[in-house]
Image 1 (tube, rainbow, N blue to C red):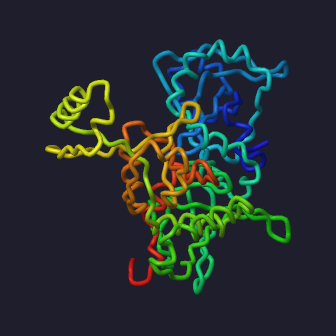
Image 2: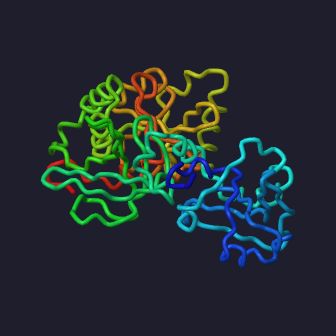
Length: 375
């Protein structure tokens, strides 16, 4: 079997044997017993930038009795990119515990190429295989669509997963003006065609314009979240993102006074003694700036930056905080720079929540405004 016949999984994180041609043998001249060898043992991994790659572990000898592999080279590394072996016949070994132990040092050197959890999970998604690049398994063909333009096939590299979409970086510049360019992040979806083929697509058609008044009380944003939670499809998802991008939101904050102001307040409390009513009617003038520090919510090991479509949406939770209204893009900047390294932003956490994952912050930042007269 060959790579073209099996796809990348037969090689990925597997031990395989390839025939040893003259060119490969020359590159392995420092490997033990290379003069006796007619094959080589390799281990497959994915270098995100360079694609599917084989680390050559040892020279070997194939006979009628099977395979015998020699010791690894301690001083020499040799690796082969997928395009150099795509037509080569190979064998792979299911029971490889002996190889794992014998060549552990070589394999340990490849740990630096491990992908993050979401990219690793995407490599298990067989429905994407029809769209994958043969040599670069993280790269998929995505059809860009936009009203008034022809669908255009571009390559995109997977970088993360959403609930119902996949995040990727656009690798090549589209020939048409879709509003996105090479190097920018896009979200794409997967769809099965009538003839049972699976395609990846990203709809980049601009949505209808709005006025600031449409978004003023937060009801349109709430309705969009409700629609998305009822039917989690692409149009509903992007409707929420676009409305968020243009909305003003409320942030629960703790008011932090400066040291001088705290001392003045403490002095007033001491003067009141055991009679709190003595504080009624008294005022304190701030001599220093009061810092408004956003509250942060925690779910397990992850932190989230809370925002609300209106002050009323905070409910009882909001009674213990100062409430600050800011444009969503300002709130997004606060979330990005928060010391907690938040995993996302949560809208209306205590009613009908919507979580904006950190991985797509910059997609929302780069969206065009839907407000009339704004860009």
